[in-house]
Image (cartoon, rainbow, N blue to C red; front, side):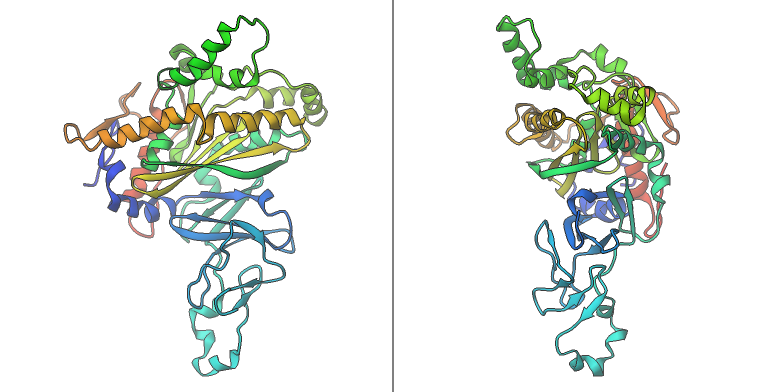
Length: 433
């Protein structure tokens, strides 16, 4: 079929079909600007960080001049994955562990053992002579490194537009305007299609239902203690998940073209955290009172960057939703330190990530159970369509930035609209809007 999204519904095969999953790798992921990693993961010359996008192994490497180069992590000789670890340092050059072909840190071929034995084949005419190939398009935006694997496609600024304001806000929450990735991500494997996890990030009508047995129970137990003072950090982080429909509706959703959007326009679940001593004064010293207030008052909830990145600026967490197969997804949950800010902010970020995003989290398991039930239920042939029509508006367009009710499913429709356009695009072309 050609139309998996009809404006108000998506076809169930979008979550189930393995052949569709394979097409997505090239039509969606290779054609979009995808997040690879943060520059703080490679602080020194020769440092590298590896990851996969669209099923292709990649490595970003810090150069002597400070720039970051992203390479296809493949030896041009026998195709061996050269850098096997997630992080490390290559030293003065990159060396393949199979036949000791070596490359400069930017991927250019440096040397080959007994090179004279290639004299008669005219190695310069072979693809192997080009070395480890650089990725077609790379953009380092305020420390966040994005790549587009297809050579032809929409530009970075056009693809993201005003949605980059979420990353701007996250960076500027540091008095020094710098972030630092801390440690390794929490990894949580889900038995579901990746789009279900993305869908859930802007679903504001499930928290008070699905999380009642976890967040709701934590709140109930705290109340039963009879304390009237400031609740412990864990309860403070759990509590907003039990906010009412009216709260989520009033906080608003903003959508941008090309499938991006965020919950929490005028309010959010991150708004009422207790203040950290000394932080406001540091922000005022760096930005002045007016700008500091504007930065800290912008407490966006979840920002979804198409296709598979979710950012929580106010709590300095980032989740990469990595497709493994049509029915399996791994979610990486990263945390960041606000350079120059009080350490208590990092402590809150660590606790939030552990309480909400960890495989051992009480909250995350609620969502995981719903994903797995959905994968089971969608095998039913009673209804071929999944409904995303909440607060649908006739004639709805996704070509302009819009702000709507926080309980609208417009952000989901915006995502699926972009997904379908890319899936329908001819090879070598792109379609957004």
